[in-house]
Length: 554
Image (cartoon, rainbow, N blue to C red; front, top):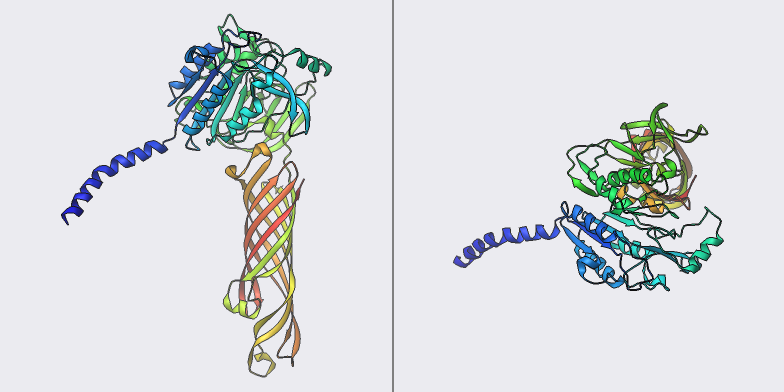
């Protein structure tokens, strides 16, 4: 007994420290990896003057609000920042990233270049983007770090709160350098219509670039930094929505406006944003309240448009962002030059969320049709015994029109339950025999029609906007009609046919995934049906229905 109490006391002393240690291990972290490469082993690459200073400034600024990270520059490491050292840093970052709620920011400043090579997604040759490392050979740009490989490693990070900032370009000027062969390829393309090489799609993240495709990302002697990075550092203090914290989106938007003005419109920072809701990457401050909902124009070509909410002018997107009143509004986007309405749709703006104008332009299908197996089962045991002991299989054709009436969806379903033979219990007291028979054979079939209204809500964690996958749950309620026909054979000496048509109310819940680009719909749902009529000697018959559907949308 003495040993038991001794062990108990020791456990009380050790357990808090173990618990605290476990909490430390799973505590969400904020990590930064800043890379600046301006000096190269192959001296044919032009030296960049401010990239190391840019990386160090971003690192120091974020480190004040972050838990840790790494700075990779020739000055900080005392050696060339090679491709392998950058990959090692990514491996270390991947090892340290233990939680989906970790915040990770990766910054790169340096040369960008292009190289011709195989593109697996097309099965042919094409241009690929590369970041120039300290050991990248001038004659072989593909010895650098490919953007597609960078994004693939970035995607593998466990965190869903991550951002990639690239202060580089591929235009053959500024922070880019192209070989004569690549310059010849680009010269063969029509002026102003150079096709941007496609990169790996990244989901649940954001990628910020210092300039648009085919533009220079400039350094400035006057600013002593890369132009974009200089204003990005200023943007770390710009709280656009007034919630007390600065997100990377807000900082980028601030920098974007200042860069465009400073370069007189020759450099346009861009972003590819894939998070849903509010930007989760905070670079300074702490959110103390729910901020306003913000409509962003990430692509600079969208900034000329005027915004109308419920037919009232709200302003322009010239600054790249505009606060929007929360609630459900009719949003109209108009080209001020042609007076053409380019977008007119109802959008529900939630307070504290960010909205991308380019994503609102994506054509959302409103008509959905699916076909698939279904099964119906009576809930009461006596109904099972007398009508369908086992689930009743068949097929179901469903149609849905989103927001057909105000913000309610319209549902229509037709179900055909296949003919089947089974044994049931049948009471034939009304024939004068006064007896009940079991083990009675029956052939039975049925049809069901339902019309309903309902609503849907998106499920962000099951959606992949970058891949065009939208998943939502939805409910519907409405009237239905069930028509049943059966033929009974009582021990082979008595046959008769019975038909029943009953009305009722259906309440359904389903999970619906829409693949926007191939226009494929998947639906999985259940419903409870209350059939009110004098049906099987009962005033209410309750059934449960399951369905699985595959179809299309438009």
